[in-house]
Length: 175
Image (tube, rainbow, N blue to C red):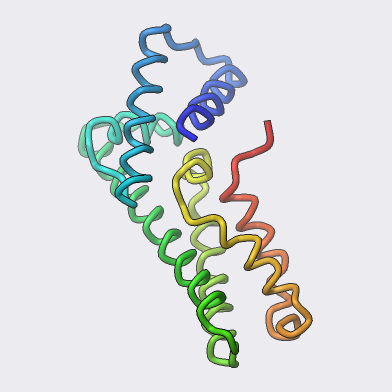
């Protein structure tokens, strides 16, 4: 995923007519990104290290003015990432754990899906990074099927487009 994320970043750079990185810088960024994503995948969270301070603003196409701005951007990204991750885990748990879904569970799932959609809609600046992160995205097809099932459709059917938006924002764009 780190390689795909960096390739997408390089493509955006070329489309914007921004000079290409030197081979050394490209290799360095790719290595830092791989370390950052590997740690996140293994530990379930991102490390607030030097690599994150340099790469997250760059991948989000944001130019911070100072080191403090970089740290604030990394903190904002980590907060957004954790929020999305918690929402996905809650939704997955609510769908897979409850054999019999009652009205309270449907209401909780509805609220969580709406909150996740709102969070992702507001997090426009993170859309170039979030699809490549190790989020528990395997639950997205389950959510789509759950919302579309005839049993729950009259409660959740209006969220079909919401789920499609969430899937679009959380999955890498096709090559």
